[in-house]
Image 1 (cartoon, rainbow, N blue to C red):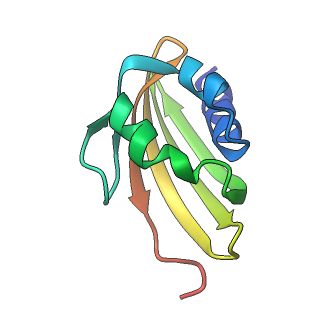
Image 2 (image 1 turned 180 degrees about the vertical axis):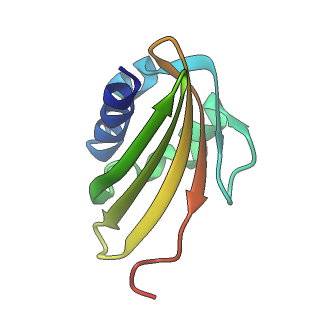
Length: 110
């Protein structure tokens, strides 16, 4: 089930388990956020992965899945205490994540 796969994705990132995380990605994985414009797998691990394991939690509020696409809305908290709310759009190919697009919300403390 796609929702279970997405939860596993968040869990691997939270515990900085790169081996498990990499197994979940397609070879042509791409990542987009307000800071990263459709970067490939190698660029993701160079620029984004260093923040893996720096969060206290990701509390998923909602997962809406249809076909091979899934929206996730969640609250997060970094170890430095900052809180945030994001939405992410996942596209899967089978049981692997092909792409993630992140939409940042206003920080919870603002």
